[in-house]
Structures are given as structure tokens and as C-alpha cells.
Image 1 (cartoon, one colour):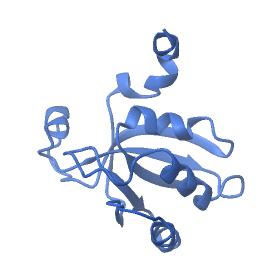
Image 2 (tube, rainbow, N blue to C red):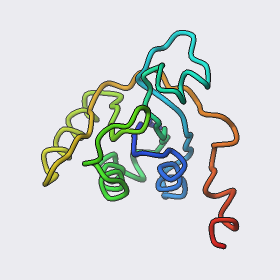
Image 3 (spheres, rainbow, N blue to C red):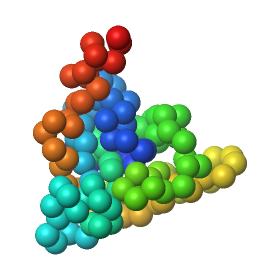
Image 4 (spheres, rainbow, N blue to C red):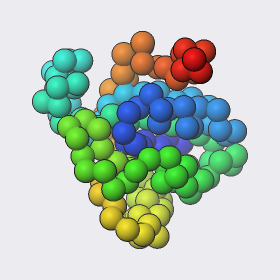
Length: 143
């Protein structure tokens, strides 16, 4: 198994993009790449902790490639939207192979792109009420 970490705006929608993809074993909405000490939910949501809202994607690379995940990343958010506190476009890589793939995918984009590419920091799981939010609230969203 491997992990990918993406910041794509609101983590509710981001998690849903990857959640049912064959080869993905788990997704979690959360935060990463801010300050690691003394993080409270209030600090995270205020932006004081410096984190990005992210989705952590655990996947089987023999069933779905990191490049396929990157394709979904680019197709499912606006990478030209300037960072707004914790909501920003980011690829947080977990190894050198992911870094190279992320940089190549960024180079292939056209237009204005403000996506951050950086080593993955500590992942902080978001509140339980935010996990699989879209899937749990599909009936409400359909109305």
C-alpha cells in the first residue's frame, strides 16, 4: 500500500473524488503541512496552524497508479485559485517517485497554476463529522 496526499479545496468534495476508485483502500479528510505542535481544531480552522485541508488516499499501486490519482487531482479542482488560509491546491509527496511524478504533472498543466508541491508533513485527521461527509449526506445534497 501507498499513500497520496492532496489539497484540493474543501476536503469533503476531495475525499469523495477518490473514495470509491478501484485500488483505493481508504480515504481520510484532514490537515497537513502546518505546525505540528499544539494543534487544536480551532487553530486549524482559523488558519493559525498553517495547515492545508487535504485528503489522504491509501491506495494499492498495483491496481491504481499515482499518475492516475494525479489526473483526478488536476481534473477535480481549480489549481489557479489563490490559497485562502487552509484551502489551497497542494500535492504533498511521500517519496522521490511521487515528487518526480507530481513535478512532471505540474509541468504538463497549462495556464496559471498555483499548486504547491512539497514533502508530506504530519497528517492530522479531521473531525469525525467530516469523514465521508458527501457520501453520508448524498440524500440531502440531491434535494
